[in-house]
Image (cartoon, rainbow, N blue to C red; front, side):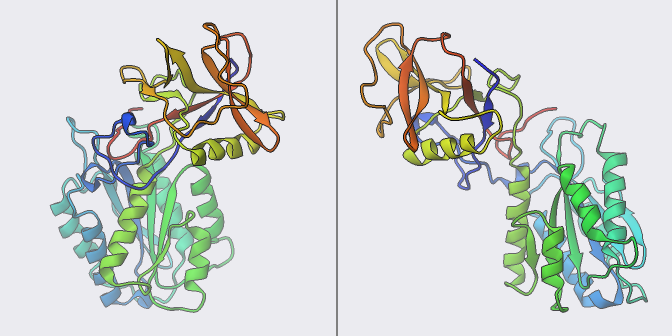
Length: 356
């Protein structure tokens, strides 16, 4: 078999005790107590934000992480979140590095103190705040024991200004290209603020404090953090992680989704053909599962091509073969046909911690 494509599905619901025997794909975890991230809040503290705005932001940050999220470092529990704080106006200031807050109590006291007042200037250059956040990640997270932790920036901005080389969009693009997720929160209704910040934000992560009640903004940020925690795992089915295997196709929707991805992936060409995880074992067609897990007997819907499955003791593996504008299953002899293959793995999330 050739090196294959790794498919990772990100679903929304929570199944803490998931079993593939349910014949649905494993949804991602949404347990806020198990968030494992490195987060830097980047807060506009120019006059445009106002003192009331800063107090609201301090309350928002404390509430977002106040639902049991473990703050700081814990030698016996890797699922923790570090929180740093940067303020910016004409310049940026590090108010808390990623190791300063070691409990939610530290966050409450530190955030409200650091965001107690605005600076006497109307200048507000987000570029300075993003640059400092980038430096903090490089100095305090990259090449550390937490290098594999997802990094997130939460921007709280009341205005959007650029000046000369201080262009926040290019810095945001650099951060996102390096894997950092950016959540933006527009505070107030300054002209074009939401539109400008949406260019800075990662997809779906541009928020506003005006859109909903404060409680809903807290939930929106928490959902964005959970999504950021749903990391794409890497490498092939034989990687070192135990939760990877050839792909299952429990539904027509997933069968079609995989085919759509294949058509848009370099290395695949028509007529499309690729291995999936269906195989014939002890008189039954079953879906292969990660090592140590029970294989799942085939259920409807069936996506067999006409004339399949062929009755042969040696044709116990299955490929998707293109037929017209779609694909279908064809059983083949194992290890006799070189083709790409489709893998899937449990996503790294709050229910599934993935080490470095």
